[in-house]
Each structure stands twice: as structure tokens, then as C-alpha cells.
Length: 98
Image (tube, rainbow, N blue to C red):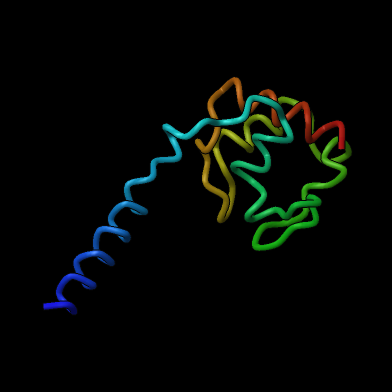
């Protein structure tokens, strides 16, 4: 019986974790915060790249419009639609300053 309660408690713990919704979580509104919230896991804390490529010196690689399109549409393994239109503009401006 004790094992059944342990399994039940663990199942509740797992299900509670699965119910976390990033769409309803408090999202940052600044470029750095949005980057950390949505991009850091692939592009690194210092923009150095991890699973995704580095995102340093973006101003020499992309125009503002091209970078916004890339963030909106995605490319290769990077999914699009992770940011709202306004968030995309904010992150784009932030990345172009780095």
C-alpha cells in the first residue's frame, strides 16, 4: 500500500510539472530578458552558440528586416513563432546592438 501512495505522489508531481505553460508564464519585455527566456538554451548565455549558432555581430550579417524575418519564420533547426511580433522587434533591436 505504501508503494502505491509513493507512485501516486510521484505521478502527481510529474503531471504538475507537465502542466506548466510558458505561454501563461510572466514573460520579460526587454530584449535581453526575451533572449534569455526564448533563445538562450540554443544560442548560449553569452551569444556564443550551443545547439544553435552564435548570434554575435548580427549587424554585419543581417538588416533589421532580415533578422526580424529570421526570428519570425525560423530557419533550419530553429523554429519560428517563438516570439510575438512586438517581442521580435525588441529582440532584433537588442541583438543588432551586440
